[in-house]
Structure formats: structure tokens, C-alpha cells
Image (cartoon, rainbow, N blue to C red; front, side, top):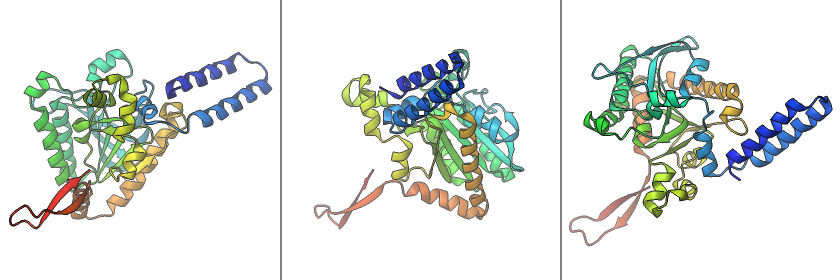
Length: 324
């Protein structure tokens, strides 16, 4: 039974509470629900976390922005082509400090998802993000990014307008900025589409978010020619927050309520805000050159090197192979 089937059972039990009149029976059923949730929703598989990361009721970036920040003002457009609604961004205040916020925004309905292209940005979306990051650098504002995308949009128009170049430029420019950058993966973190907002001094993930180079379905299709083996692929890909924390790809796991962020949104928002404030306080104490250098070193150390004696190469005593 996957996590969504377990959730349906919990929802059914919660509906029964509304049909009861006896306080004793209500208390008993609530205890039964709590026990069931603790037994069935604590040991999740990688595929369970994929399903939770994609859950239709999972909070979107705008929900986090509205709760965490004050006086958010959204900016629009990349000054080159158009406004891409799959990425939202602007300025806000956090504990009376000016902040630049950039986020990938999913829709809550089918119509909104179509309007926002299911949070798959076009190149103009990444160029809007870059415009806001360069503005933040100019005015010395920290940058907070919220990542939630299956990946960059792969359509012909996006490729014609320079999708790869837009992502690459974001990666390059983010590595050069001297203001603090905190990136939070709140749902799906897919491929270069996610990484284009993910070159942060601190990269954090919600407990049931995922972060990978490819979707499990895509991985299964390539490896086994069978997309139905996505659950096996999810285990092999090491895409959960716990896997990535062990590999030092991310810096912090932000806990979610039992059953996922949608079970208790306010608690999730509070946990994210607390993590942002704590990490931002630490980064604000650093000189600008150290902020830039530490970010560079963080990404430079990904993977590890093994050294081999390779005598067949003339004039080369050692051969280095990078392993991931």
C-alpha cells in the first residue's frame, strides 16, 4: 500500500468523526487515527516521497511566500520577451530585512497549471530570475529561492529562445554573487530546471521533497525501457532528502508533519521560516568575499577523487578519475 492509499484511509476515518455524536467515541477514533498515522506514515519509501512531493494539495511557493514574508511585491518580465508565470519573484521583508524572493510556482487547478506551464520555466523565466538576482546584488539584498519543478520546459520554442544558455548563465552568475543565497526545494527538484535556482550558500529540502537529474519515470524508461518501474528507479536514484543529506548535496532537511506538508500547512511554513531565519543570520555575519568563496567551494567539492597509477601514459605518473 503506497502513501496515497494510506492517506485515503486516514481521510475516511476523519470523515467518520463528523458522523459521531459521542465525545468518547470521537476521542477514541482520533487516537486510532494518530496510532495508524504513526505506524503507517513514518517509514516511507523513496516512491512514497515522490508521490508526496507531487501531491496536488501540497503547498505551493506562493503559500510559503505569503506566510513567511511581509510586503511581497511581485515583479514581472525579463525585459526581452515576456513574463513567464512559471517563475514568480520580487522583493519582500523578513524580520524587517529586505529580501529578494524567486520561486517556481505550480498551479492548484488544471487551468492554473496550464497558465503556469506546470512550473516548467521557459528561458524568459530564468532570465527574469537572473534580472532579479542581479538587482539583489546591486542593492545588497539576500536571495531566497523556492524550487518546485519537474524540469525546464523542453518545447521547440524554448529551445529556439536559448533554454540551455539561460540555465547556464544563471549557474554562472549565481556562483559570482556576493550576497547570501538560500535555496529551498519544497516539492520536485528536477534536473537543470531546478539547479538554475539552486546554486545557494545553503541548499535545504523539505523532508518529503525530491531532487534529481531526471524523473523516476524517465530513468526507468532509459534503464529498463519500462516507465512502470518508476518506483524501483526512485530507490536507485537516491533522490530523497535523506539520501542527498548523506551525500552532502544538501545542507539541511526541514521536517514535515506526519503524512506530509499538506496535513499541517502552518506547521510546515513555521519550520521553513525558522530554517531560513537561522541560516540567514549565520550568512549575514560573513563578509561578501567569504559568502562568494564558500558557495564556490561548496559546489566544487561535490563528488570525490580517486587516484590511480597509470603507467601506460607517457609522461603522466598519476591519473585522476572523478567518481560520483
